[in-house]
Length: 392
Image 1 (tube, rainbow, N blue to C red):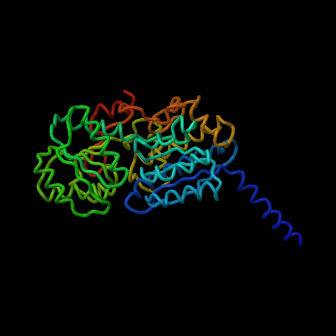
Image 2 (cartoon, rainbow, N blue to C red; image 1 turned 60 degrees about the vertical axis):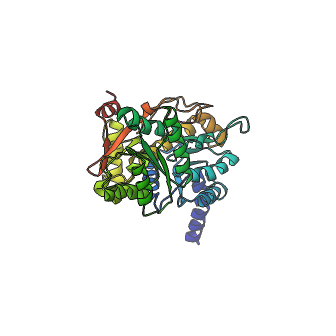
């Protein structure tokens, strides 16, 4: 009888203990072509959660991550977020890798008045989807570099640094690719230029020969890209088969492991904006790289910016919950918009990163760097960027 009473007492206490955890939703593509980004982001968030829990959690309560695979599909992303909010009773969300998934799913955070920090998706519309006056309060924040900034950097690299006059744009058919194309065209138009050809391709398209021939025949001196790893590798490999050697410059996804692995030597020299390049340029970055090795058993991060942004997004959320002294969605949002204590992250040390009208941590190209694939890994394209990353 005594043993039965002990068992019943333990069972009655377990729900109460579970309720003490601060439940945070994490969604992203953990399978499929976008999975290198999603897995990197998830591991970065897990590392931050482990560190915070080792320090006593937040407000004396442990962090519990509730993870869901959105498969990089818009409809699945929407279902996942609704499940996290309605059934898992999360207090905030992190993650979301694909722009289309973000635009389809973050509306449920907005409706529930639960803040979400977008760790990876870069479409410029993401933090502008719910603005006043129609939406007095915006619950969507972001730590990644939006595509308006990235497109400007891509065009600067091609036109200003390399003095190229004729460029082609290659973009995928997703929201990410379409919106990225628009940002590239806007950045070119600011210089009185337009692409000599704009080529659209589908996800999982294996042959880019026709598009590449049109670009070469139009006299393109560089290919500017907006897509993800597998298709970007098809572009690089197609260029190599044609013997067409022009610079490949694109969005941050040229750093994806499945681009570098699938393209092999044809990836060499590709350049892309990066929020984080995995070098121990500061003690915080060195500690993060050590934590990654300890957590995963590997020194290689499939997509380093996604990992670092995931890590930083949880640190910022934790700081907001501490400042709010609450897990109420409105209180957390208000704290994010007025963070008073600096947060030392991997990307940067955040000093009042958000405001009522600004929900982006990265506001200019000065906050990020140009990366380049060399010997199968992404490194700083310019020594001046490496020195800047080290605070010199």
